[in-house]
Length: 264
Image 1 (cartoon, helix red, strand yellow):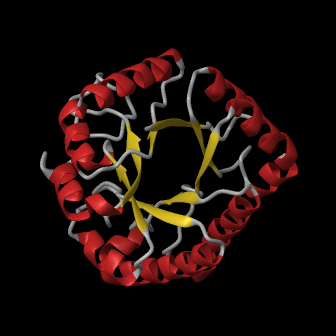
Image 2 (image 1 turned 60 degrees about the vertical axis):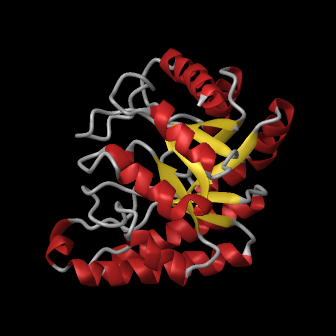
């Protein structure tokens, strides 16, 4: 297993890269969000970033922009959001990235009253990104969300997506699968889509909010979940999405994750 961490996009990317490498991680999951990690700013530092990745022997994964609205009922907002995603995808290609994490469209605002229309727009967005990712030879890994976002948080919902987009893979977010849902949800993802898993996100919570706590600080049974994931044959990349202000907790979660995975 290769273990990764995410940059905090309000801080300079190069500084974040160095700090994550110094903590002992194998991968950087580069989240391309404003203000410091937009595609334009990243490409302006392309040579330095690639040199640092090489010197640290650090694998690079990209997390495409999160704070956008790709199925917004306003066409102008929807188009601007899609543009940001596609530009991030192009920048990923320039960095030699082969795996990109994507959030599905959110159901927000008045969209909650016309959910089927929002889902239709969400599928159109997925098709745009999927086609371009295939052209760039980047594996698109769609992340399961929470019921708060209103779509693609249940295992069964992904059946249609994977049927329509055969090369699309799954980023199984273990924290999201534990929020306001059944305890069996994460096992449903593993059972139905185990062979589609191409990336993992791990962070802890108490089942109510997306807290991004250090491993062991919530109620998620990582030992049992890791054991089930291992049965699928998965052994690729896992990003620890632990967003504590003190990164000692991120480092501790890395140690815990390694130990749990080894003994699972």
